[in-house]
Figure: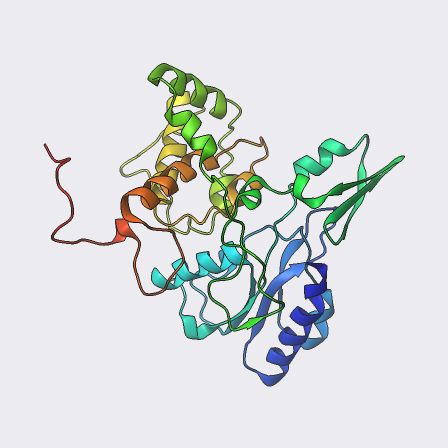
Length: 315
């Protein structure tokens, strides 16, 4: 994917010089390996700072919410689906956007790369389908597929669903993947096993809200965890408050989550918080045939009302 960057720079420079957009939202090299950071470029001479590789996992849709200017944004498959959701939910207008579509083969999980190291990592480079990890006294080359983020390993929508210009040929979508194998294992557990599973899963949580802050769907002016009139959830580290936060946040994402992995990527405790959103994603697919962000022509199932909606669950 490193070959995309020259095309991204060419398109961005052209759009800025022609005045078709006021800014370009992309990535620049971070101060640490595997930590490319979002940046906003509004002058053609700053285009040289843009980069693109398998360390661009942050979802740039976060930087589009409620903007009024004309923007160019670089978007891989999951990003583009979140952009669709933003447009549907009136957080930005389609005519404001020029979308540079990036066919994606997945992003690197920095924790998996760190597990290979015997010391501090000084550089991580991409050579086709091989990732080379270097550090003080060690160097390892491994297939990229072994270092993919969990969501990328099972992604079946790697190409952008909405774009104005592509930086490369569309990639082949993955087929024959059971995206919900881990969810099915939890569903098969007894109630007691499920309780213990989630107790253990959430035990490291410090409620730093990194998952919420990284999520492109969490744009409410006042989050329910910060509301005081009424107070929906306590502020303590009580297990009940922690569970309430995670379950309610997941339900707010139901029918909207694209499994971009931003939440897990941001979590400093490496908690598999996608367990919650993936379950609701699976339910929406099975009950409504719905996948978030795939079309501008239909609203999410939990965002609509039909006179013939099933009501058998009402007692």
